[in-house]
Length: 493
Image (tube, rainbow, N blue to C red; front, side, top):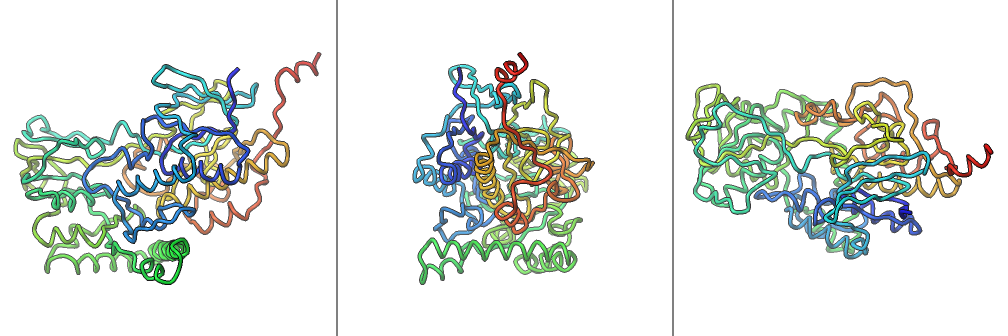
């Protein structure tokens, strides 16, 4: 008979590691393992290798609330983030719970056994693992495939075409002309990084502009507080300060979008050459925070444009040529290397299938309860981070809610919990941005409702109050004690 773990965590990235920490701390009697499909921890931060990869949220909120981020740098490099995660694992003995090269292929909930049955692919063949509760910490990106549009005439281009997600370690871009197709976080990170790495010139070709905001990359609040407070307290105060500033910025954007747009444009113009066409290249057609803002440390993107080492072209690509790309306007841009920073592809559950009593679950027809549990699916919790703030803020609340839920069920003698779907039809995605990668995944993502607990508020304050101080029991969660099949049959006899 297979051992039944209390919890299985899927994914050893920032979400999974945080969940493991809180399980050890708040549910010490629970047994758990963490399945990682790759041979390394870190998720995005160990997989993506493109030049300049860094956080696009400040590390004082992107870091864990239980482990201070001690570097004054707010937007930190991928290798520093990976070191931080490795430290977290080592300091809390989480490594003993990780099973590397274990990829969940399918998960089936069995009412008969009262637990999840996982089919897991390993280096030694497929295995079956069982658990009472399933914690999904895979994020929602496809690590094996990026969004990759096709362009007319690609076959004629004589140079190299690169996708950032699969950056070749031996790529030499020194003294080369580089065209980056895209305008999101990856593109605005790559432009200054490639210039610094020795590229001859870099052009960012965007179909439409994105809001780009400068952030001083040394947190003076943290630096000042460290002179008078222990590091842990300096971190906590800086963290709370940054959370409040983010909330204020987001709410101002929603309340006064025209004013915020004007402010962002004005700040960009200050850092660009006099007479630069800011309206053309940095003036999106949507309001701030309808899509995620791009943050650049110390205005590095603006600096390389001002120095003439980089440029922005705003137009659709007509076709590729032997020497580069031609835009709809007729302008041609030469390139030795073309980087397609055209976005990520959304994938839920790390690509695994989910079923209940061998009946497939159509995730896109489900609704999300409190932004973390799936309607009509027993004993499952999904870590979705924020779209308007640091990812870790929400997954930290989700992990703590899981611990609170498990302890509540133990105290009441329950084994199974199901958020019962209510009659609240909605076509609104759980991720409420109009970004391209989210719009492309409308038929993949679960839905959210119009009011709580089915509404995803994207507000740390609202979620923190609801999960930490709100009651577990409500009219949506249905609890029960599992009755083994044998006992039920004996009763009938």
